[in-house]
Length: 283
Image 1 (tube, rainbow, N blue to C red):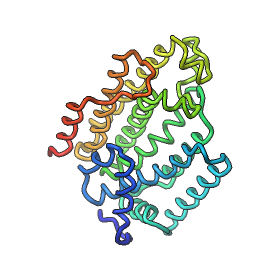
Image 2: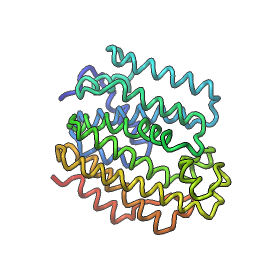
Image 3: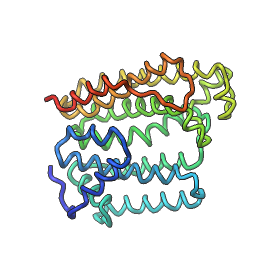
Image 4: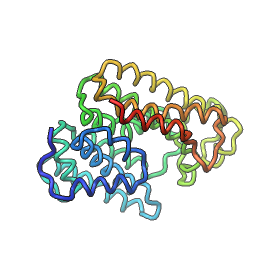
């Protein structure tokens, strides 16, 4: 489908937001057709903008709520046929072209509200809800843009979103701690007698055992996502497979260094990045 209702420069604007974020997402989505790629860049731009609100440590909490409330109104306007700028025009066009749901955009904003107040040692159901809002909801939008609106593709979004977010949580323990956040679940901390506060948890010698539990949960979701992908349109699932292939090895790298907390997050070696880059452009 072709995106309609856009003004000159709209796609350039959302593309610039993605490119300036210095994320692998910018190159990863190049395997998509121009319209699907523009839709994904629009979704990413939206996510980046609302995430920046939640992560702005200088912004008082009341102002965060107000800014996120404004985004709720903007999304409601998009789905009532109104768009006021490049990002919302691209979102409106993408929603029409790929039957995107308003509820998924709202869920992402709900996730940013959860992040607005630092999350510390959440119970597993709360952590699962958080993963669903900030990651699986993005996946539910993405698989439709990729070209598969089946129930199996929604299953991919459910599992892969959780797998990716749990991997992010493990990779970013140190970075998150600097913002007063600790996403490791209450139940896993309790089982290993690790303190529930940020400083106490990071100082605990048992923290790697907690991380291993989270890694096992992520692996379970990667396996579930892989099984669901096998039942989907294989061409449409290429971006999802590449995301899984770029994140899943990070679990092994973190295990290899025994989940040592470092200011330098794990990253794929250059050779593996080159392999993934080659896969992007293979038919």
